[in-house]
Picture 1 (cartoon, rainbow, N blue to C red):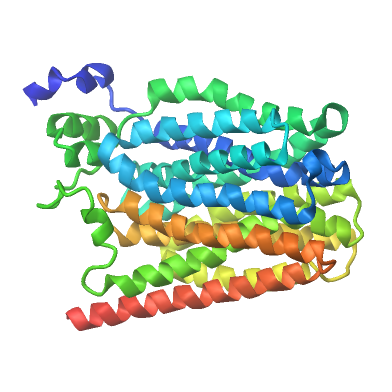
Picture 2: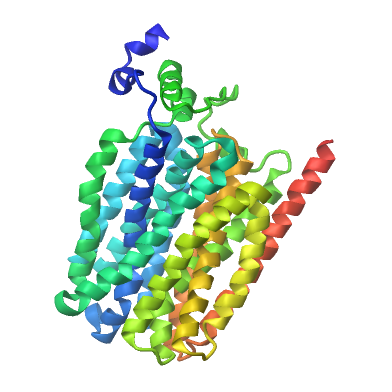
Length: 437
């Protein structure tokens, strides 16, 4: 260990006091909070932008722009896992936050729908790049028996951002306009990023696979984390991607991807269009925005419940049950009922919907080892982004055609499809395990 004492990382961290893994989770939580605000702020200002014909937006073009952002997320999630293996997870995190923060500021200054869509695409790239790396941090800096809970805790930040976004819109959009809303949503990043830059450590596993054993051992001891030996072929930068398809793994990988497709179709379709659909169904603008807050508050509660449950019975079972129940509650959101009861329905839909998708990530994260995890998470999230692209697009098309009420039924069908695909994934794992015995 004497060689490690002279390394720059060793000098920066020191070993006098074991550092808190909770601090790492807290930093990831704060960064994902920024991700959640910037993700959901678009849907929160859409009713105002469409009502004022800002930048010439229509429901159809608004849905298309939402798809631009999600296509950016697709690229960001796919590339971030591999990039983190090459340049480090810490650098990848900071670059992604800088990208989506600058793009959100640019969105507020856009002078045309083309500029607006371009900035939302770039914003999506940064947002998508952050999430799988933050989840990987949470799993690495948590004991094995609590990794699903750690994933859920980190993802509560995303839903907290989703709950705050409509409140920011309510506070600013009427008096100061939609541009100020976007600009204000980027300000917290300017405060948190310097703190994270100083305190967020590199991943010990990442250091080890990049040949920096002394630094990896020191950092693992500093935080009390496990440090597994890298595979013999870990020097191959594309090996983590190949492992998603080797030895019959391709069928499980495909089922994971299709489950994520269904889950993100729900998350981004319902998340973007809930306020507008509720307005079209006869609810006033204030209630329609607060429905989004209720949805995301439910999501926060759901993350904690699903995480603890998944650590006890396994995340695959939670995904199947949660998506099946999501179908019921999302369908009920389109049924005529009192506003008070509808708030409860929306709350439970959010409780199930967001945490169901988060447990897809927990399933994939626990299925793969530390080295392959960022790539596996990046690709499952990236392939799911096709659903995130399709969800906002089909919602906009239905609203444009005057069929807003059908949207909830379509999203309910997506939830059922997700439950079936995770059940199929469980079957492929069981079959492959039995064949190996």
